[in-house]
Length: 534
Image (cartoon, rainbow, N blue to C red; front, side, top):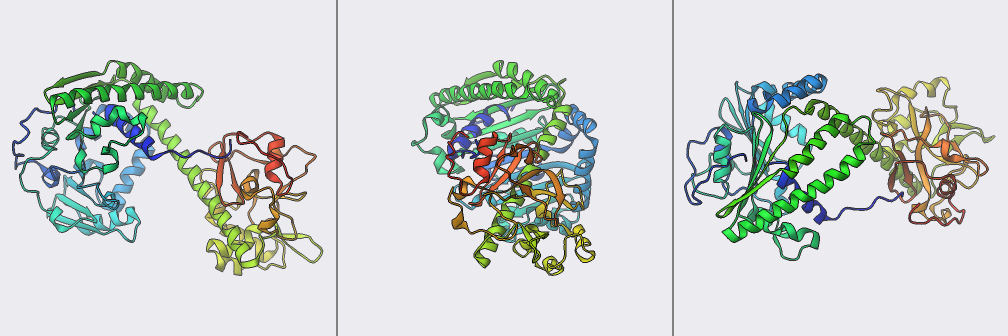
């Protein structure tokens, strides 16, 4: 129950195949002869897209921002939209209303580093500041090894190159390629969004013959010439995927693959509905997904020559705005939980850093000569979470609430906070350790890693307590084997209990374990046997 299982790489490929089949799909991608040259008058950023790009995406600004669905979202969550537009204005100098189109392209994904090489072309309704966009993108990416350059062919077009050469800042030469039809579809003005891929420029691993059995049904798609998709938001949202195959026989196989992907999505949707029925805060998401089921069953598949196509339409009057609000809340909760897990991970690393330097973990508290706790272990590990300057300000021979030490409460490091739970500038933390009676920590003396004979992966190092305490106060989770310890833990991180183990791993618990199991995890040398399913 405690140890999450990993997800294999091919599982991601399987999900990708399903997603391609039913989440992005062209209502009408114009039929064109395979070798006809691309029109030289493609508008805006489309002129910069290589016709054999591994990935390409186009978004029509007014078509998306002004659509009924997005208007519904904007009305349902004005605060989020205000934050988004404020971010654009503050970092880049333009708003969502100023964006006429966005084009993203990845020339190749064959090599391991090529996912970090891509282009972004913004077409704006008003002049822009080149340096501001360049700095904004660099700040957003937050990577020192990333090279960002912005070219300005005119005062309304910004070509952002991320780890790409200057040759991509020029409109490409007019020559035929696998993405011709997708580029023309984007240029037609009929679609809110278009996405496409040249399969030959994706990683060789997904195009090989040695694939897991669960992926074989989708192999024809990976061997296609291209896959393109359009989104029409004019009335009922309609997604259409078109697969361009190498032959009529191959196209028929691709149609079967698309149908298999739709069936897989139907299975996942049915399971998702079972889970959501129990969630009182997901009624609008539930309504959208319930409508998606019949839409998937009604999806149309057709093959003409060497092309096969799947069409999916959803009712336009669904509560998309409410579903967006619910999804944003779930996303924020997940992000907050990940941040809290990372904070707990940093605490574990700091504990081990302290052990390396002192040949023992820290005691649960700094104590005076009589054994009275003065300051928490959270103060002792400050130098190991890059807070040595703060550590130097404490008087270790004074209690946490002395005149000097109490004023340092306001400087609590973010490492001890839980997003969404700890208020901004808060001084209390839920991260606490179990102390006494064979638990991982004792008040006066720190233990060694060799003392943990139950196994470092089977013993709690730190956990989220039910109650928060001042971060410098030596107030921990007192372990009494005669009492029920389940009430000491708290599901405070988006409804999950977080526990850090002595081996450095971090785990999330959807519920507190039974008391006997919990006692086994708390003690470091109790000799208890914990089964794999506990």
